[in-house]
Length: 561
Image 1 (cartoon, rainbow, N blue to C red):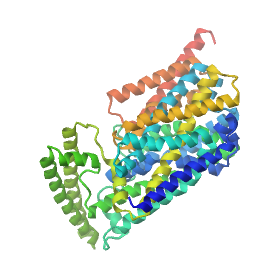
Image 2: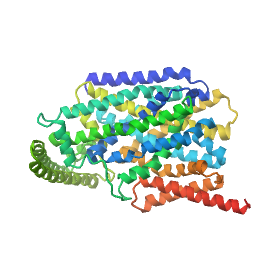
Image 3: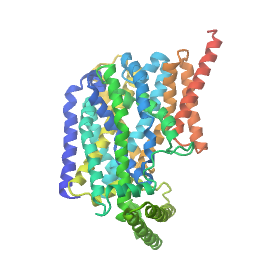
Image 4: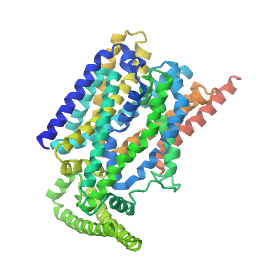
């Protein structure tokens, strides 16, 4: 990178850590540290939630998803507005009026301690793994820029974030998120502008969208009811509804946010901000990916976006075969470029239809060669999980963005990563302290002692997440990886809260055994069926509720209730 870009990134890192640490003075006592003394305005809480959602996974994984698959991923968010409304009416007032620190404290009030502890443990396990994936995204960028191992860059990201989270608490998390949100959105808008300015002079915005549409990259509705298809209208409105209700309603990383609001109404407003703005922001991110696809129709893309694998194959014994595939890919890409140009120049419906058909054929040929290259990488290197979709956006930033904007975009990726990492580390520390340490070991511990242990817990979770991150970067599309992690747990956890809030006769034994049955059912479905992971949330929730009610009913009959 240019020294100007390094300066921008360096100044950002110094400023964000300093800004987080200066908020330490507002974090005295565990209520101030964990919940900001329940004093934050709704708009700050809402922006903080959205900054967490616009993570580095979103900026890197979702842009790569948009490049490879177009706008179809937007269907995943169709249920979000409805989920936010439902939660605003149900769980938000429950938690806020209960004056709890964690969502899982409520489960002990409603059921028993074993249900609370097991549910909190599942949260710690799922969120601890997910935060590792969040760290992986910017680690990829730094690995490419610095030419060092991903493990090294993981530590460079995780350690500073853990430091200001350890000392600043949720105050530091929220107010740094608010500032980072502007940088993130600004970076995305800058990327869209540069992408379309880099197109040939005779290819306008309308032409670019027409070409993307001909390639199927603008499809936002797929009404096929197919449980094995990851992103359809039905998975995005039914299965994702369960996921969003669980994530925003029962995941401590989100519940902790609206518990910091000054009142129930302000907590509701903070959630509804996501209902209004999440889909447009996600569309912007995917549009960057679609723009990358159109850009690379006219500017030939590399055969492999992962420079490490490209270097290994180019310099190793398999180089002749790799170079032959690369030449074939170059010819296919050139044919695709000519077909795209013809489509952009088409002036009437008949010529446009013919040009679109020709373009789709050329695009199919280029994709077939590219798929063969990926298979060749897997067979030659033994890396069966190879998927370089996460390198698409970083490669564009480093190769094609002008000086200054490179630093801005990388700083934006840092901002997206830090906003998510800090929030999740804070929630992991809160659940560890409140649901386990204080509940079982030091119920009467002084605030000073509990605060010190909380900071240690934050640091330890940071190290755990860094360990997960060291290998998560090679698991494929990061946006899918994190949702796969979550979907394994979220449905079952949601089922417990449905029992707690919606079924007064459900008891602790039913909830506990239902939770075990729900997790077991999701594990079986994931292992032995091709059902898409979004539907795992529905499976887990339904099984927990059904088993929980049955066990509760049998218990009531046995004691003559």
